Length: 272
Image (cartoon, rainbow, N blue to C red; front, side, top):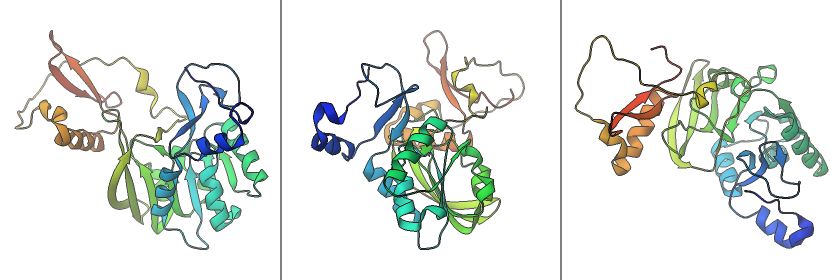
């Protein structure tokens, strides 16, 4: 259950202290925004990312004057506002799949004298109408870096985004430099559980709620020196899960057997 917190209830100073506390705050539960009243049940569908996380992602962009930035996930508009203040509103495009979220963020930013371009679209597709961009930043975690983001970034440009599959809660931050329209390479830094998973208006992640069954395994088999126990072996297990997700971005972990002691990794989007 969630309860909205308003300035009238707690006072302006207390409200501002909570807003700027270094934690991620939900701004919408289901389709109910935080300026409603009464208790609300459900999961967060839009958040205001922790200020420290926003700064960390923005610092990774290494922006300079004149750069054009594509932002995925408008949320409260805080990050887009900082980018617009730094670069100018005409240099910043922010994409979100929710028209309600975009409208509210736009109103808040205009009140602050800032006016970046706000677009309602599937962020996994980027925004080709405004390409090419010097930088792409995602405030939601993705299972893989969409090809569209690479194609819409200039050679030498940077993409900063968190990668998270269904095996781990953590989303390591990838900072990638685009080499050409088909290639980007870079490094991972420490992850964050605070990045909301990307919503999509398409069907690329539509299998999340599907029932998973372990299919029969006809054909050739081979053995491996690495058993499934590695998935649960402390730090090594976290690394193993992350590597599995890089190879199969939509992989899901299921158990089978009478005692549920058989561990399987199943990719619901890959033909069986």
